[in-house]
Length: 209
Length: 416
Image 1: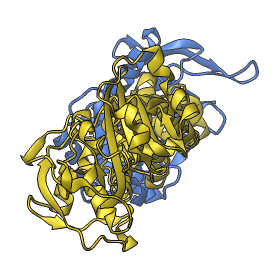
Image 2: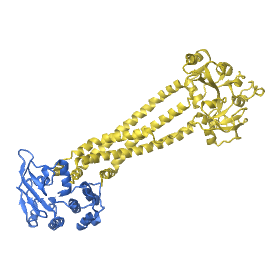
Image 3: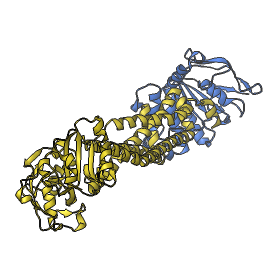
Image 4: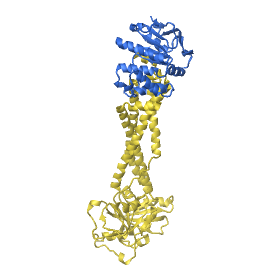
């Protein structure tokens, strides 16, 4: 279960954001919709434990992220939060499988090859398992990012503008994929976007302004 | 996937950067180790061949040349001295002198020097006869272990000596044959490189050239000690190697000056001349050392730039690792490991290069001076250089590592 209260962040006196409270049960989905400049990425980073809020708190499975020490936050993030960014970053010295395995290692888990291969198969990337990151198309990169975010069976999956560069067909496909995969591991899904096409697919919505 | 493996993958992912860092690092380490090896070997060779000799007496000329020629057998003689003139020093009853060993030089066989001397010469270098006998009669020779080995000489073999020390001088004493009667055990000293015989042999070989000279050896016994040598006051020898009874005796210490001031001969102290030689070589060695340290410094800077540049290219990777849950300390460790990997590879390549260069140098030195340069193997110098390599790599990596440690996830990703 994800719960936030009175979350706020200020970059300076003039630039500050107050965010609506969020409550989400395991397996539920939420669309955070907003135009540029309303603090979408800031909220995503706060939810992901990448940025401490100036005010308020987030709790995930009854653990208040703010109360944890910095190193405990790193560990918590590794085990419980998966993030798919708008731009897909990888360790370029490693191939597709190794990038996925790395996330398991960092979280302190043993590398679960079967689970990784299952996800690669599910997302149609089995044949790219040993490919270099450089050789992937943007679409493939995004799917590898999704697998990497799912690999540790997180409680919460965050996706930042996952569909902004996609046509309608692919837009549907990616969001369905995210829904299906988070359902499979009973994770909550929060998608942050300005893409209004998603309104129809994810009915549970909060408008940021 | 542990940190070491990740660091390794990152390092080999940029082969050109890797190559540049390794080339510079290994050149620095290799050159330093090469110099250390040569220095150790030279010191060892010069020390071993000092053989407790306190003074060398010979013809006037360059004292260093006299020492190099008569103790190390790598330069030409300064000339000859008359036995009559030197008889006081050859006298077994001399109150200050423990041993006085006469040397007659000038001939060689296939560039190995023939030394006319007495049996006491062997004691200087702790040499013993392995096979056969010591020389006694004229034309009998006992050869050093290396000479026997390289030239394949056996007991009973005969050969003609050449005038001078070069093989190609075409000045063979074709009419006179020397005969091998014994072979010495190896000593690791210059004795291994010599063909030993009596002074009589040297005189007899040259008898044809020096006509009108009196040769009365037929009437006397073989010359294998100073007493028998002194019975030929008109003959010449090249030098006398002297050991004092008491090395700190005031009169003994003043003896070289007395000889230089009052006779037509020259006396020199080996330790003094060798120190002078080393201080002359030292200028060149120091210049090379400075160069080596300069290369080491440049290689450290190169590792620093390589890591720094690669981290700039990888700032999103670092942020990503942090998102995935890697602590700042892990990123710091990873970058340090990358630096240390570069240092260790550079070190290994450098040591291998220094061994190859040393091998080439050793065979060159063997060809020019007949000295064989031994290989001491992996030792203290190499361990010290390993410590230095790790330290240099660590220092070069520390600033990039701290930058990685400071990676701000939010700022990096929000900007990207």
